[in-house]
Length: 125
Ligand code: HEM
Image (cartoon, rainbow, N blue to C red; front, side, top):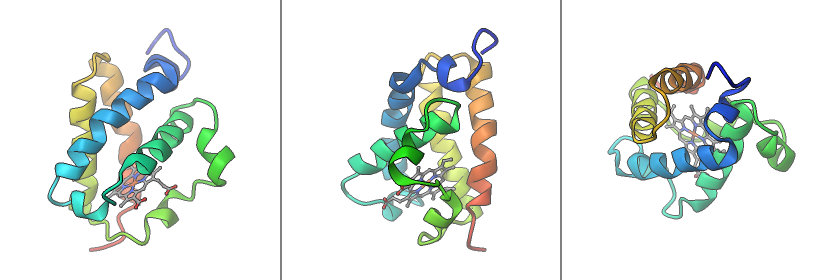
């Protein structure tokens, strides 16, 4: 990370984000707490997530350019998100990152950055 100014650059740009997203969603779909929330056709979700994480990690604003203000908590309101589900989501992301060859320190930083939003999206006791 030290040689890069953004996480986006450190993971290798859009291609790096895409690799993470491709490792992440199969785990989400297999997870008993998460899988049932997602549509059978996960491709559009993966595309949106690639665009979102690109901008979230300091790359170009691909998501906002296409879909407007992210309003991510609001976009998650239709889904019952418990603390357990937030932890499960972060767990799948941790596993996806562990399969990459990104430095441990970078993986850790990404999980830290995603933890805030994940717990913020909790909308059910
Ligand atoms: C806390 C646990 C989370 C759960 C259970 C969850 C679940 C979901 C579900 C069910 C969808 C909708 C899929 C569909 O289109 O039908 C979705 C969309 C999305 N999620 Fe999450 N999510 C979580 C956390 C996060 C986090 C931490 C981020 C990024 C910081 C994120 C980013 C997105 C994006 C970008 C979309 C697509 C939004 C759109 O439709 O434009 N999610 N999520």
